[in-house]
Each structure stands twice: as structure tokens, then as C-alpha cells.
Length: 255
Image (cartoon, rainbow, N blue to C red):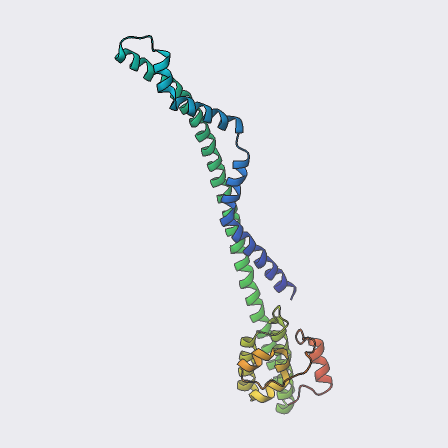
């Protein structure tokens, strides 16, 4: 259970990080935008205004030149010098912006790679956990077979097999309990089929034993009759091994 909780927590944390990967470039851009040099922006605005008005200023500056072609050429040259200042300042801003974009691309890539590494780790742990469950189940089966063979009594063996199955079923149902406090109906249905195949336990018998772990809506989906209650009782969180032992001691496991 501890291993399962750890993997679940790692999966939830990873989902949050995977969502952050898409948001990181926008967050970095916004942060770099806040850190831009306001003085540079002001210089660019001033230089732009001067460059755009440079032609008229040039004609006014060289109004004493009688030759109109010469006067216009000097005015254009003057405007060009003003435009050069504007272009220089704009190029400096572009250089800084390009540097920021390099940072954004670099750190977004590093974070994405780290999240991908964690995804691979979580996938491996989920696989290991599933393998451990299979091994535990196989160990239960092997133990059941060995004890059955050693006793040599078919009646006692059958009863012991049934008790072991109920321990296994209770653990599986408990592990499938969701946030709503009820067990997974698909897991419930699979265990019911297994109980029928191995021990000839019919649906009604299985429902009498475990249907209280399902919500009323899930009971309806599985074709289980639901009694109308005047007051809703507190939800049960699942069957523990302690519950199972109590049922065993009191004969509750017998159908």
C-alpha cells in the first residue's frame, strides 16, 4: 500500500509538471518583458520620431541652398543619419530580445527533458508495482496449492481456498477505492466473475457479501437492487484485512 501511495503521489506531481511545460515559455516571456530597459525603449521612440520627421527637418535646415536637387540630397542625407541612430537602437533591442529567446528555448528544453525523465521513471514504477501485485497473487495461489496438497482433505481445502480468495478479493477491492469512498465497479465485476468461475459463487451471493462497498448508482449499473433510505449513512471506505478476520471469526465468510 505504501508503494502504491508513493506511485500515485509521483503521478499526480508529474501531471502538474507536464501541464507547466506548456506554460513555461509564456511565463518566461512575461518575466523578461518586465525586465526590459525602459530607457532603451524611450531612446528608440525618440529616434524613431526624429527619423520620420528627418526629411522635413533636412529641407528646413538646408533652405538656404538654392539648387533644389542639392538641397534635397542634403536633406535625405540628414534623414539617413537620423535613421541610422534609430536602426542602431532597434538592433540593440533585437539583440537583447534574441538573447532572451535563447534563454527561454534553453530552459524550456531543460525542463521538458527533466519532465520526460520523470515520466519514464513513473512508468517504470507503475510497471514494477503491477508486477509486484502479480507476484503477490501468484504467491497466494502457490501457498494455497501447497497447503491444499499437504492437508489432503478436499473439504478443508475448499474452505481454505475460499478464505484465501476472500482475503485476496477484499484487498483488491480496498485498493480500488476511489476518492468518493467507493470501490471500482469494474474491479468488483471482475472479482465477481472470478468467484463464480473458481468457487461457483453466484451473483446474488457475491452481492450480499460485497455490494455495500458500491454506491447506489454503481449498484444500479450492475443490476443490484437498491433500497430507498430515509437518511444517508456515512460512507464505508472499503474492507480491510481486519474486517475480513472479524467476518471469518464470526462465520461471515460462509455462504
